[in-house]
Image (cartoon, rainbow, N blue to C red):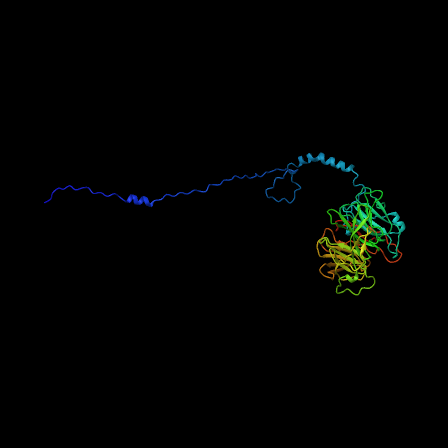
Length: 460
């Protein structure tokens, strides 16, 4: 029923290995290289210092009300012995010194805020009865210049006058003997030291001349002058100022007088002042404020005071003998309604109208105007009414009015170091030119503790 049978072998190849190989794939990637850097730090250096005295050992929190019976601190005796020779040597040196000969200690409290340091005078000035008309301090603060003249007679005078200088820091300074005496052809109305050269002085005369002196030149100190011509002032020059010129490092002289002109002069090498720019103040070209009344008399605005703004080089203030107070501009292009000013070289200079704003007028001449060095819009003015007015450049009416004295006020200044507005920070000279033939007493120089530099007060 069953038999053995041999059949052929049947085989099949495995396909799972090939199928797995086709599904696999190789991939590769590259890592970003690591960046390394080295930096160093600076080690903190320490230093040690020693004191002259040995430190006391701290007490263990004990409060000792009475130390009279306690022994001396440790090291005190050795310290005193170590410095004994040095202290004795200094005491002997002080005993032989004459630095404080004649010095008397005032142990009483001084209540006065102003004390007189010097009384400067000149014998020829006193003998002729001349008056002190102007003062100016040098840029170093050690030399004071004083101009003298006579202007109380109200008439044209060609009487000889003087400009005197004193160096207050010079040893052996004699208040009655000036270091420099300059003769002038007429009364000196104003003086101004150069802002950076302590030997240069600009001055304005009663005759209308503008002069520049160099006190380092001997014997002729005259450096430049305007002379008398068509392009100069024909009335007394009440104000002179040094202003920066167009070229770097050079200065020009700005002058103003009662003739209504404000002129800018360049110092020439030929010994003359050359006119570069001119301004004319006329009543018909003055901006009218609400309180400005009808103008009478001359058409020119006689300038008696002038101030430059330390904040804006284009702004300057003008006070007039008629009580007007004007804000003016150097860069004005408005032509003045007057004739062209012809210079000595034959060239014409067109006069401009600088007035831009009119403040509330005063009842008398404005003798002084000064801008605040701490606020760009504040300035102070004073005149014959005896009041000091605080003004703002942004409004016509004054912010504050203070009664300074019952007579004329010829100068008022802000404190150069303190921004607070106080009366004691002002310097003034009053009643120097009273009406009549009476000659006032010479001014006395005072120094105030509230000022960074000496200033002048009226002689009493």
